[in-house]
Length: 267
Image (cartoon, rainbow, N blue to C red; front, side, top):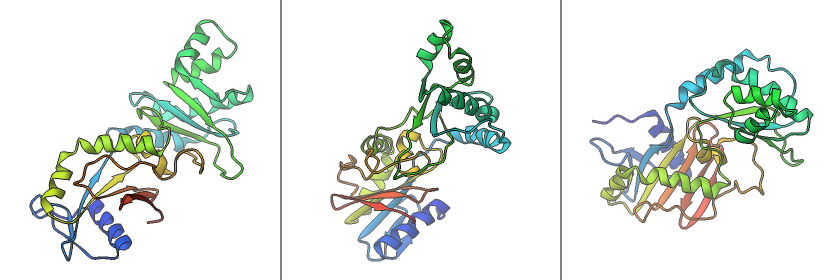
C-alpha cells in the first residue's frame, strides 16, 4: 500500500482550499493520488526538479554564510555558471566584487566568449574579466531598477540552468516538454475515469531556472516583461483537463481550468 507523501498532502490542501471540496487518498496500489468523494475529480501529483543541483546549492549556501562580499552593488545581477563549477563555497566572494567593478565603469552585462577575447587582447577590463572567467561565469546580466518594483541589490547565481526563459509562455513550453516525458501521469488520470482530471505540478529551488523563474520570486519581475500568466494553453492533450503549477517555496502558482489561466498566490 502506497503511503501519502508530504508533497502530496500539501498539494491536496491547496486543491481542497481552491475547489472547496474534500479529497481522499486513493493511491493504494499505483492509481491516481486523490479522488473527490463524489468521484468527479481525480488528482495526480508530480514534481519537476533536478536533484543534482542540491549539492551545488548547499555549497553556495556556505558562500552566502561567509559574507564579506566586498563593496555594494547598485542593482541586481543574475549570474549563470555551469553546475560542474568548482569552489562554489567562495563563489560569491569572487563574483560579487568583480561585478561591483563592472558597475563602476558602466558595464551591465558579461558574456564569456567576448570576455575571453578581451583578455587575450589585453583590454582594459582584463583583470576583472579574468576573475569572472576563473570563477566559471558564463554570463551575467544586471536587472534594471524600476520605480514601481524595487528589488535588493545582490547576486543571484544560477547553476546549470540553461539560461533564463524570455517569459511565462516559454517557461510553460519548457515545463510541458518535461511533463510529456512523464507518461505515467496521463496514464493514471485516464484510467481514473473521472470527468475532471487534474495534474498538480510542484516546482522548487532545484527546478531549472528557465522553467521556475516566473513563479520563484528569486529574480525580480515586473508586470510588463512577459512574466505574468501564460497567454497560451498547455500542450498536454485532452486527458489532463486541469493543470496546477505551484512553486513550493514562493507559494506562487498557475491553474489552467476551462480554457483559462488563473493566478494562485499565498497558498
